[in-house]
Length: 329
Image 1 (cartoon, rainbow, N blue to C red):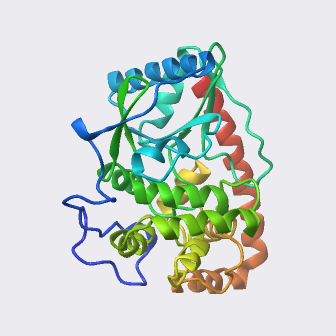
Image 2 (image 1 turned 120 degrees about the vertical axis):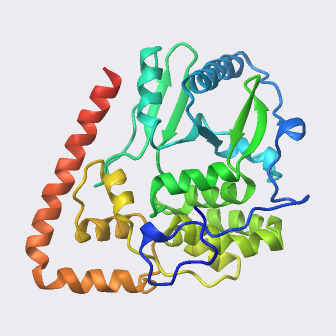
């Protein structure tokens, strides 16, 4: 599955599979599993005890169904040696895209309900946000990572291959590895999952922290990881902060566009829209050859393409609402 050499710079995003060697031997980047797994501190308040017990049930359900998922977010900083930042209200799981909808439906059948998402964007939500009323547990299920423009299944398989393991919720739970945790943390603050671009006063210290913690091995691996998952557009400021040359943003793959819109038939204009929305601002000139080619291809028929794109986006939003209703009924 992993090519021996990286694809050519002109390769499409569908072809850009990760080309990283597996880590071996001790080191900060090696996943911790088995007897060496990190044990998360026991919850100290009744509210947290209830939420952890609820998440134990989620882990058991995934095991029963054979569904793979990775715990992500601030809660996996400690096992990755990245400190212990303030935890957020919701638990985050990156779920195998082929089974994420089934997991959401099974949770709803067990009493979970859709959580409200404050969203006013053009694109449909990229997350199944759920709430368990009795315990107050919030859970986000991500079948894809917005702005990671290659095939979502490829992204998940890569993350799964590098996974660590921690003991939490009285269970052994897989989690994203150290380098991807850094990438996702910066993505949260700089990329399309953020409500708005954070001011430099907030993002600067975060990037400075990772610059101090990242190992030479991880620094060498980072560009290959970002290229492999198609995340050039959301990692530009991180690259700047680490002294790396920001990579040119590529056109999102067809498979990513289909998964992100939720319906087939995304045109080149639709993929260009995804690239524009789901890339960090401030680097307008850093685009790859496939983006320039796409611009030239749609320029002669710009107005008809825009009209078609508006209709496609509206259909995608309606399809997303139907999907949510069918999953949560």
